[in-house]
Image 1 (cartoon, rainbow, N blue to C red):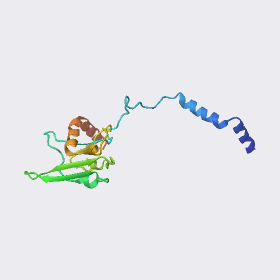
Image 2: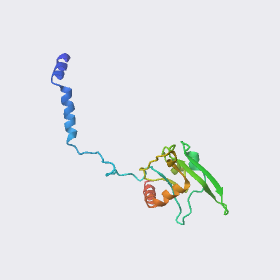
Image 3: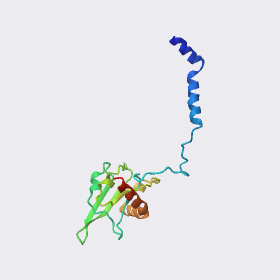
Length: 162
């Protein structure tokens, strides 16, 4: 009986008909393809993109030089050097992130006690030369200044869900 069934399935092109039925079912369904440069998909407020350093409202950088982000980074992408100021507080003299090494895990952001280093929603960046994706302290602070409004909104949204 099985041989007869296989013969008719082969003779009537059963697999081809099933495949065409599946194609026909999805042919008239709503399209989900996004035309990327013109259309953008929505991002969550916890999206981890390009790094930025934040400042306090008075303009002073938040980073206190605790080096927790450097210690917790599994890819060893962060390099920090600190110096003590006249008032006895520590601040970073060098804060570099090598984005070639970074795996965007978010551990640096989670470990920071003062919310100084954050990962923004920016994912459209590139480097043409080896040094283009090596972000220094000044570059990170500039990113934080530029996108502070969006970063602050994301922090408020994140606090609601914790």
